[in-house]
Structures are given as C-alpha cells and as structure tokens.
Length: 271
Image 1: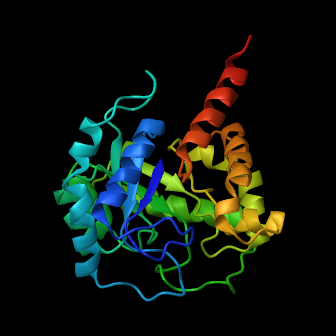
Image 2 (image 1 turned 45 degrees about the horizontal axis):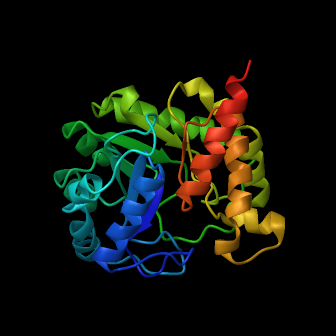
C-alpha cells in the first residue's frame, strides 16, 4: 500500500496540496509495484487541529476524480501486482467516508477505530472494504499518556468487538482488514510487543495491515529524528511482519518495499 498525502503537514514531509504533484506520486508508486494506493487529505498528527470536513473532501476530489487517469498511464511491474491497483482513502469522518465512496474508493482506511457502526454501514452499502485501525479514541488527540496492561490482549478484545459491529452493520467478514495501529495510543514498549507478537492476530483469519513506514518507534530504536532517514529501519520491520503472516504493508518507499518482499518471498519458497 503506497501512501499519498494530499496535505501540507505530513509527519514525513512528503505531502502536497498540489493535485498534479499528488497524482505524480501516485503514478510513481503504481509503477514501483503498489497493489493499493492510499490517499489521505488530513494528517494524523496530533499537534494540528482537524481540518473542516469540507476542506478534506475538496482535497480528495482532485485526486479521486483522476485516479483512472493515473492507472491508464502505467503498467503492472510484474504479473503478481494487483491490477488495477486498489483505490484506498485514509479518513474517518462519516461525511468524508461517504464522499470518497461515491467517487469510487474501494477501501476505506478508517483511522478513527470504528467508534460506531456508521462507517461500516456506508462501506457495506457501496460493496467496498474497510480497514479498522486499533486506537484508544478519536484521531487528532495526543495520547502519550496512554498505558496498557497487555497491549496484545487489548488489541484482541478491540478487534473482536469491531468485527462483531461491522458484521451487525451488514459488512461481510471478508471485507474487513485489521491494523494494529503502530504508534497510535502506544508507547515504545507497546509497539515493540505488538510487533513481536503480531502472529497472534492470525486467529481472526482476516488480512492484517502493518503501517510501519518511518514510524516513531523506528526512530526511537535507532536514535534518529528525521523520518526520511528511516526507510532502512522500515524494511527491517517489513521483514519481521512477513515472518508473522502480515499481508499488507503501508509504505512511503514502495520500490524498496517491493524489492524486499520479492527477495523474502523467494527465500521462503526455496526448496
């Protein structure tokens, strides 16, 4: 899953409000082998106020209406790439979710943690898929004081509840992806524990997405503050995730991730 930030305050510094630039990033990621491209119009950074939902939709319109143009200008990198790539939107408010679905979003990346059934109901109505991220409450709220007794036990309970809620709203189980929410309402020890015990999520028999790209926990381990210097550490966590059965990785540097996945898959399949 390639990341395209249609905003000017992305933590990794790669966002842009220029539609042409954002579409160029999306095209480059598709060419590099992205199976999914995830557009986000609002940064998850907690030291910024939420933008008006009208502004979020306006930013999304510019890229979603031209998505087919992006795909038409590219070709699959190999015969294993999902084609055409899946169109994903990273959002959480009902109005933005409904807007993105009307413009063709196939996957809603809900960073709000599905607090009620409304987003699941919308996704079900449009026959799309829903990614549910574990967190402790609404986005845009700093949670550096959040503490867990056992983060994996809590994540397990969370996904049990959210899968039941999604099913109640008519969303089939095979239309749900799970995201343990690296760095969201979690401290360094929590992140490292969930990365170590990721295979425990396989009991849900649902695809797991790991959003490891340039995350704070990598910088904490390496003693590096610049997010742009964390791509090598990102690949390290990608490798660990593959060993734990993770199926999807949310990545800025798609080419590096594509190469890593190919090599690791070849090793795993060797006689």
